[in-house]
Length: 232
Image (cartoon, rainbow, N blue to C red; front, side):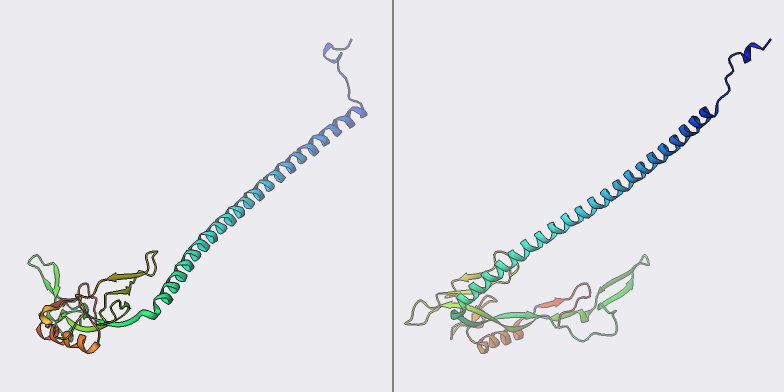
């Protein structure tokens, strides 16, 4: 008699082995196909990420160019307005003079550092500095030329009833001309220097220079240059 454990034993045939081998190959092929698909999807995903990055950079670049174009447009509009206004006022130009200040310093001495500071030790031993005497100079007055736009309303005595001075805010929208009634502060023959001030305008550089000379002779104002900055 045969043992019971061998009663249900089935020996694979050649056909069965072929089928099993075929199934394994199909599994391997399918696995490789899945791996390939995953790899392709990963590549496509990376490509999409790069495309999105390039697109974002392009959008950012376009936005920057649009902002620059808008800024250039505004600057051009301001420039056109300035030129138009300047041309409009060209026929009314008149040269005026006003007192300006300069801050010359005496020659540097050999007791201070390059910033005209004298160094010394405090009671605690800390190094301190103070302005050297050569860092203080007398304020000096000189004529400053201004190109003004003048309107003469009264032709009989040639009085200047209104004038316009170009302001210095050329980079802003409020660029234009400052206006004032100068009938009271334009120098006239007979005015005393002690009655004038820095807002006075002169029609000739000679009169302005005479006032500057008077100020230089009578003024005791001094100026100290701070933080090592020097004005000549």
